[in-house]
Image (tube, rainbow, N blue to C red):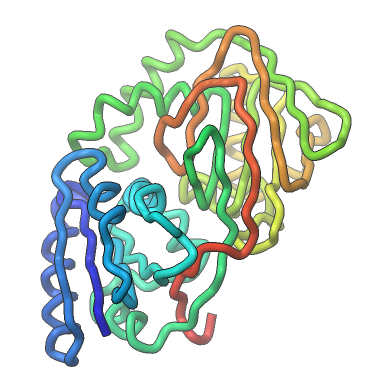
Length: 292
């Protein structure tokens, strides 16, 4: 089997390169043809993914959700080569959602014996995503984090961008259309393809990577008390108690605001409103444990 391993050299506090070379050694020992590529700056993984050959059977991505997103956006056709994810990031939403192993030996087994699960892909302003798109306070935080991608943050590293976002954030009304339904308004919108927002919070138990739908959550107001309230509810899976939170489901979403607001996908800043997203169901092949 021809395998390309793309690793993020700064993800996981330097653990990714160690795991990459260990995995490569295991796969070579088992008779596979393995190439290793380590990115050192943004877009490295995207550029390498754009030049993969037609004879490749597996892409292993060692990094966080952002690295997976970068590779996804580099692929000329994301439906062809199955992706194996070795999670070394902070939130690791994709790995949590799909029950992916984090050990090198189990990942080697996944390359060889895992089954292929076609998952949905969203597209917004030309940017592909697998997990989440959002507009609101969290996208302001992501915007502040953009300049900090040179280092691994961990959860503690979010404190500074959260404070900066809190100082800059201004309440802005968002107007949201889902398919042909009547528009709704709020101050924060999450478009989910996973339960595990940020790796810790669950705002929709039905959200999955392969439902064929976006699961849309609209929060009416963003204040410090409401952020804390909804955050605790997400941690304890009790968001359904708050009837003011609107839940919708569909295959297309449009978000408008005045002034323009930043939008993030899979944990990285993407673009600004107005934004329109479409879903491409069951498109991207992800390798998952055979018993998952």
